[in-house]
Amino acid sequence: MPDLSAGPVLLRRLRHEDREDMVLACRDEQTWTWTTVPHPYELEHADAYLARTVGTSVDGETRWAIEVDGRYSGNIGVMLDGAGRADVGYFVAPWARGRGVGSLALWLVCDWSFREADCGVVTWNALVGNVPSRRMVEKVGFHVHADPARRMVVQRGERVDAWTADLLPEDLVPLEGLLR
Image (tube, rainbow, N blue to C red; front, side, top):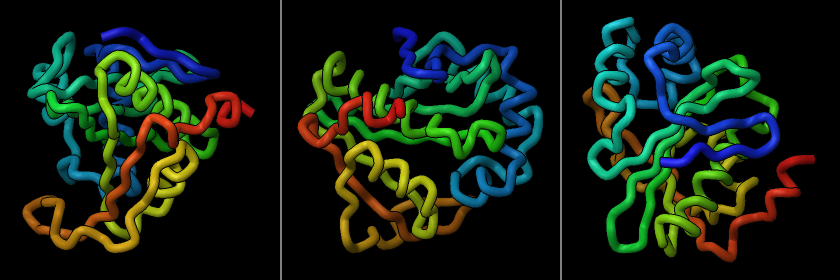
């Protein structure tokens, strides 16, 4: 898994040193509201996640830490189905939001999926109501489907509706547009 970078964003392997910032990010209300991370998020959750993921590809998923200004600032991962489709998921820590960090990280992973993982489509889903995540995928070029997928995601034991979207290689916006 290569490091990827654009502008202020570096995507790199997760490290054990990311533990404290990971806990802070996952305790943020926006993070636990819109993701499936445990709530409340404790040190043992970060330790277990890091034990499973540091230096490895897990269950066909390639995962990167998002780093900005030398600080862990979120996670992004892509699940490859082996037949030309990738499904992307991410969260951005509160201290990195509002700066285009998520869009750059997403662009890097989509570009990598098309170029290096031989994908013909990248898909995304998020809980209905997660407007910042939806704006982010739209900014990168994803086509968001009109109707939510009903009860698609399990969040802390409850099935909830999700927005879905897809991105073809020709839909990916030029990187220069995100670097302005």
